[in-house]
Length: 384
Image 1: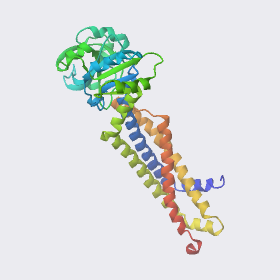
Image 2 (image 1 turned 45 degrees about the vertical axis):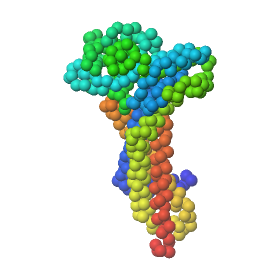
Image 3 (image 1 turned 90 degrees about the vertical axis):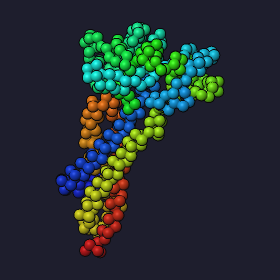
Image 4 (image 1 turned 60 degrees about the vertical axis):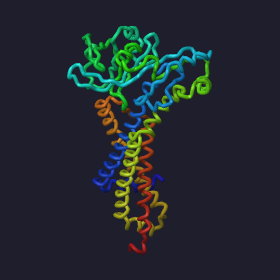
């Protein structure tokens, strides 16, 4: 095997410009796959950060709710009925809705997601929420997500400088009394947390007791799967019961299957794979064609067809690895640019890095396998 590798390498490096073009094409295909997969995973991750942060074991929602983007309220009586079970430690109603936030500097309105909670209990495992809960007991105050997009105004920077921060939410004057960190998502560019009473002040058309999410905490040692299964039979059918992980999967599945976004990113990845396959095929096909007489000579002196096929596959593997390196480095840079521009969690993961490497090798092997057909015409009798 070690004696065959130099031949593959020499053939690749003989035409420096052709090699550079091939590596550029593979790197471009890798960047395309990295970006599509990165945005897809950022879509999924950003939209379940709130779900992940919930400090509870079981979640109750309206059976007509599809995602946080389209929640339907239900009576909190359903939630409190879960207290009939001895293994239930506490229940916590959560309101949520979208409303308009007016930038205090420019006056431009922008949609923002607002959560209403009982300030006596912290239901979010998010930085900044716990220490600011008592402040939410004051009328017309909110906590502002410091990771919201800049279009909402310099709220976080002004607050950190000790300036009083006031804004208009749904036509109502409010004051920012603290910051927390959740982050923008494809469903919301910014977030607010306030008390349930303040929430109903901001949304006067919402009825008290009609909540959007019910959070159930179980006593230590309770089996959440068994309790969830029991509640599905115990509570009326107008609500859905999820474990926390099932609630996360429910939201993720909505974005993956019920919207065009997940399909678009997956299609983009497939297109990148196809583009890379075509580019590598053109390079390897040209390589085989240019050296057809040399391959025929090798056959004439006793080298087998399998040996020549192995040479092509080695070239394909080398192209895959060499093209992957600049593609990976460029993707890291592009992730940083996208993260700064969108505030979305676009990060490289080891799983994605390995997956794209495997796809790149597979892409090049497929191209090599197609280009191998030209070797069948390398007949010494015809060439000479």
